[in-house]
Amino acid sequence: MPLDLILMGPPGAGKGTQAARIASERGLAHIATGDMLRAGVRDGTPLGLEAKAVMARGDLVSDDLIIAMFRERLGADDTGAGVLLDGFPRTSAQAEALDGMLDGLGRHIASVVVFDIDLDELVRRLSGRRVCRAAEHVYHIDFHPPKVEGVCDEDGSELYQREDDHEDVVRARYQKQWVDAATPVLDYYAGRGLVERIDAAKPRDEVARAVDLLIDRLDGGS
Image 1 (cartoon, rainbow, N blue to C red):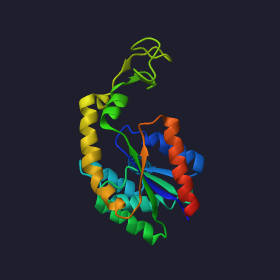
Image 2: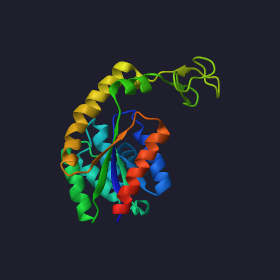
Image 3: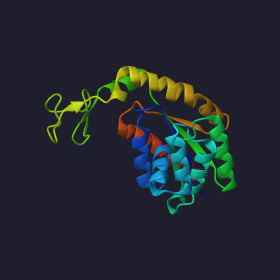
Image 4: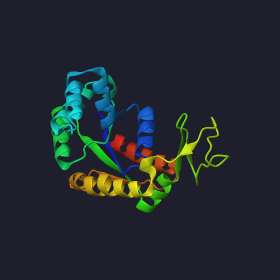
């Protein structure tokens, strides 16, 4: 049975980093909604062209179209062992549609892995991040400072703070994209006993171990 997982967490919780690692080590397909949409547009698939037209009008891509793209993506060879869904579902309606689609394929969500982190810790993590202009090397004023303040160790270019790393933006995104948007989805899956929580404030290697223990348990029981 494929191991199909949903990864959830506020922006900056480290979900993407863990998803890339898990996918590489376990042979699971990491399916991020944004990447899937961009790939469809880039490759000119019928669904990608439909999504491109919708986005060109400034509209949101419909649940039905996203589900259709997921169905198409699940037909690829790399999804046989399972998938990591990242950025979807975003609403309880999408979650219901996803469950219906997977059920029709003889698959199901094994767990919803939530990367929990306190807002103040998230602000500290993101607002201290600095990126070099030349090649986007990443530093942190507390955890990984450059040798010379404001200058990239690798290429000597200026380090800057991205707009979405400003404290007010971090707090606004946390409220809108996590607290407001994620709560109905978490409630939906909690009602099915599928939510598992990971303390994402811990060091990266400890988070990785906790995630691996969880997946080992799920994989052993699948």
